[in-house]
Amino acid sequence: MDLEKRAHDTNKPMENWTRVIIETDEKNPKTIAVVVNDDYEVADGFRVRLKPSTLPWS
Picture (cartoon, rainbow, N blue to C red):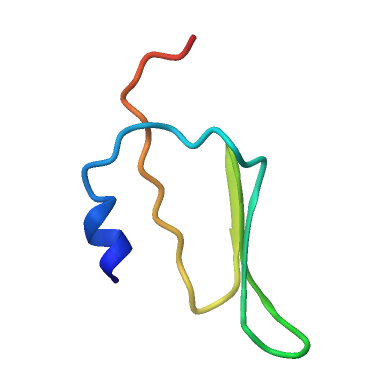
């Protein structure tokens, strides 16, 4: 994926989202993953890779 390559060295935490829901593009979408600040849930057969921020927390 091109975005994965471009975001590889990104270290700035996301600021504008309270959660990310990834789902299929179907008439009745199936949820693939839900990601929140400190947890995630993912459908069988998929995985989530998280990159911790190295910035100090305020």
